[in-house]
Amino acid sequence: MRILRFALYALSAIVLLGLGALVFLLKSYPAAQLPESLKPSPAGSVRTLFLGTSSMAWTDGQSTWLVDGFFSRQPLSEVAFTRLKVDETQVGAVAAEMFKRLDMPSALSGIVVAHSHYDHSLDAPFLAKQYGARVVGSESTLQIAKGQDVPTTQIDAFTGSGRVKLGEFDIQLIQSAHAPTGFTGGFNTKPVFLPAHALQFKEGISFSFVVSHPGLGPGPFALIQPSAGYVEGQNKDIAVEHVFLGMGGLGKLSDAYIENYWREMVVGTGAKHVYLIHWDDFTQPLMKKGQLVGLKPMPKLLDDFPRSLELLKMFSERDGVTLHVLDAWQMVHF
Image (cartoon, rainbow, N blue to C red; front, side):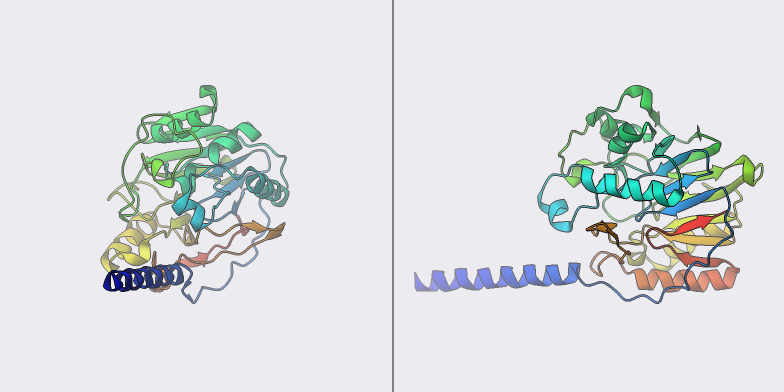
């Protein structure tokens, strides 16, 4: 009996030590040498406001649309141990600040959803209902919108590549791929009702977005690659000046993969300006007690942002491309 009790104590100690080590690793943020801050651009009517992960608000002064709009950013404890729902107070506060910074009325023409994982799709239906937007995405995203009672008249579901017009913006959806992280694949075939576990949000289709606006010429000016994945040749015949490059999980992939990704998204499109997105820890808030909060990289256990950043710096210098790491609430003018 005494031996059994000792064994149980020893096992408990090992479990506690293991949990302590895991918590430490998940709270250990890597130090990265960031490129110099984005210099203020001449004010132009077309602009985008970065809002963490791959969430961005785009406007031309006439209408506003979003990529993803994931503002809840629940803490890790909620993601791991509870079922998720929209943090309506937080989402409302971030949206109000967003419209204020864009100097635009509180209305959205659309929300294009990169794929259906919760860190892209969770808040989009709520925002669509609040601000009159269309939800644009895959059929997996459609099921998430249905689960939050978005009318079908406000949903545009795509089974592959396609195109949508939001105000004067033309957005081409290109079927792409998620970064090969092990959390990929699957489709939502039934409505996803909230609250729901994070793993209930199946990827569906991962999209890239090619953005055009008549005020910036007849061709596209920007490529948004929310996830650090690619399909070889997906950008054939696409030329853009600006690329918003997703980084999530890239630091855990091989040097060869990272270089191929860069070649497909940047070299292949002839881009001259690259802005890094989806590099941040999305379990940290964008606002706290009414104050704006800057971003932190993902914990070392989940990603190696300093490593991937150093490689991309090297590639950008070699290829004559400017590289920027976007922080939350940073504006880019075109």
